[in-house]
Structures are given as structure tokens and as C-alpha cells.
Length: 400
Image (cartoon, rainbow, N blue to C red; front, side, top):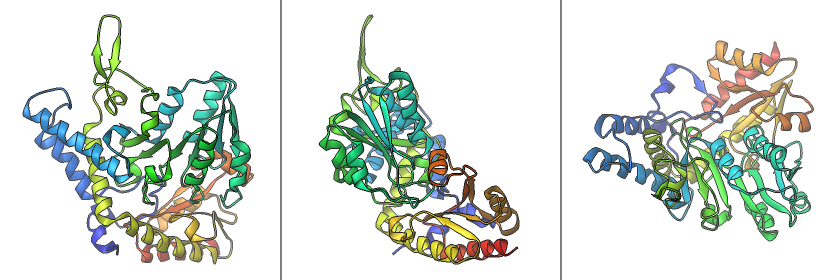
């Protein structure tokens, strides 16, 4: 059982009098993670994998332990399968740029993707000529697996899908899509930016080839993230950058890359952020992701029920809370979403996101508009009372 009041005590920022409902953009960070980063700077500030002195040895140990924590959190076999990167976007670009492309290849993605998992593949198309096929969903973000079976064929090189839409909150059946992709010899990359923070993740069970995710959406520092690479893809996946730290040997006319994950982590990494990211995974594991999921469902139920009953308010995404995470996008009739967000902030001390949420294809294709909507997104530190306050505020705004 998730003890929300105890959790909230780990987030001093919640004492500022603001109801924070923008975790889909960036979660808050608990004191344990902040202190772990400060520990690095105060006690063993040194570069990693470079020196034999005690500071460097301690920093390297903590850095490697963070890899282990993150790998364990997503169910990976070991630290060699998880490259520490700056965010989900970098992970997607690393995979896209490591592959050999031809005009005979096909890339399959979906209409609900964040720009990072969409324009990256359009750029591949522009540069190398492969076809990009976009699978469409219902207006709620629900997919027919038959559409993936039609789109994915033997020329498909990669299928790139999100696990959870950052606009609709819908949960995409990645395991089933992975099965279809593998039947045709295609790889699957999953954008886990919204899924990993909210849903217990097991990359071996889902059989994905790549999973990119961001630390800043799951209690970790900004500038931290992970890219899971399956055993079968470790040798073929080339680093985005090479340099110091990525090599096993260099001669006057050749070089040999280091073993993973070091071969993907060029130069001096974001050491404090990686160590903080590891601590964020420890925190979530202590809470228990099954408890996070259960609380998420309660918050989603309250959000959907409350907002859907308000006259003049349109709520987007699946009607069934079990098909989504604790995220609700909505619009108030006759009101620009930015004005909605500004009013909630200035008059009610509630922080929500507004706009197109870096998902213009979704806005244009499903909603036939690009002005966007307001988005309230929850996490384990939010309470049912906060959701009720949001609902009351939206009802009051809609009335006038």
C-alpha cells in the first residue's frame, strides 16, 4: 500500500503551496536523490574510470552501481545492456543513427508519437530514402493490432512506438507489437519516457530490442536517462559519439571499442546525474512499482470521472482508466488551453501543462487542430484531495 503522506515528506518543494500536476513534463525530485547528488560533490568529486586515487575509485563504484540499479529497475540482464544517456531523445537518435539504411527499408511508427520518436525517423527518410509508414489509432488512442500486422512486412527494419502517449495517456500493447515485428525480422524500439515511470517494466518479458527512457520523468535529475539494448543488438548498435572512455585500444591507424555500456558513454559523463538516477530507481523500488500503478489508477479514476462530468469540458484519451495512466488532457469550451493553464496557476495555485505537447501529428490527424489542450498529469506524491481541488477549479472556470 502506497503511503502518500509519508512520500510527500520527501518532497520539500510541495510545501510551496502549489499543486503540481505536470509530472508528464518533469517529475519532482525527492530529497534522497538530491542528497545523493550532493554526496558526490561533497565527498568524492572526481572523474570516473580514469584514476587510481580513492576519490576516483569511489566515484567509479557509485557510477557503476547506478547502472546496476537502473538495469534492475527495467528488468535488464545486466549493466552492459543499459547505456547512460541524457534523455529519451538521445537514445532514439542513437539507435536511428547506428543503423545502415537503404531506400528499400521500411520504418513503422504511429500517429500518437512524441516528436522525438517521429521526426527522427522522418530525417532518416529524408537522408536515406526508406519508407515511413504511420499507423493510426482511434481518437482515444486505442490501436487495432491488425493495423500493425498490415503495416509491418519483411522490408520493415524497425518499429518505433511509444509505451504511453504523453497526450492521451493511453497504454500501447508493446509486447504484442514486438511479436509482430519479430515475426518479420524487424527490430522494435520503445519510447518509455511516460511508461517506465508509471508501469512496472520488464524488458526481457516484453522482448523489446531497444527501450529509451528519461530520469527526469521518474524522480531523477535532468540530463539523465537510459537506453536499453538487448543482447542480440549490442554488437551491431554503434555509439552516437566515440572518444575518451569508449575505447579498449587505439593504435596509430585503428581503434577497438570498449565493451558495453562504456562504448556508448563518450567523454566525461554526467556523473552526479547518473548517480542520482540510480538513487531514483532505488526510491521507486522501495515504494514498489505495483503500488505506484495502483495509486495511479485511483488518481486516473478520480480525474476522468470528475472532469468528464463538467459541462463544457472535453476530456481526451481512453474512457477506461485501466487503459491509461494518471494523465488527463482536456479543453474548456471557448477557452484557449494556455489561458486555462495560466488561470489555474495564477488563481488556484495548480500547475498543469498546455499546448500541443510535442505531438503535432496527433493533434492534426486525430483532433484536426493544432492549438493543443491542457494536461494534468499525476505521480505518486499527488493526493485525491488535490485532484478534487483541480476538478472544482476547472468547474468554476468553465462556469464563467
